[in-house]
Image 1 (cartoon, rainbow, N blue to C red):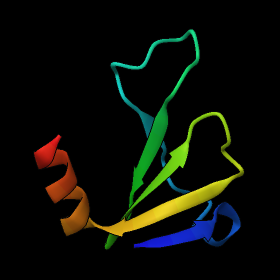
Image 2: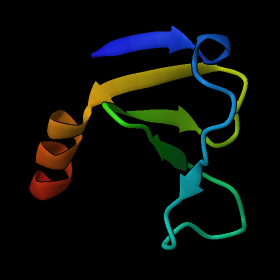
Image 3: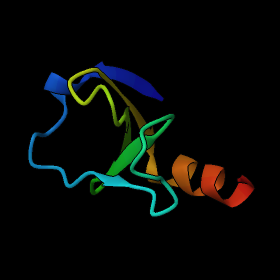
Amino acid sequence: MNNADSSTVVSDLAWFKSSYSGTEGGECVEVATATTAVHVRDSKEVAGPVLTVSRGAWAGFVELV
């Protein structure tokens, strides 16, 4: 797992927010997939830190939740 500044993450990533997220704000995250990793960030702080995990780790997390 890596917690890096968003400036170190490729700028051309396509970020997605869950279809279950409402438009009223609140606690939301966005994810972007790359060839070898999945990047996660706070949707309200897009210039903030980005959590980077392997695709396998992300798949395991999603399976558990």
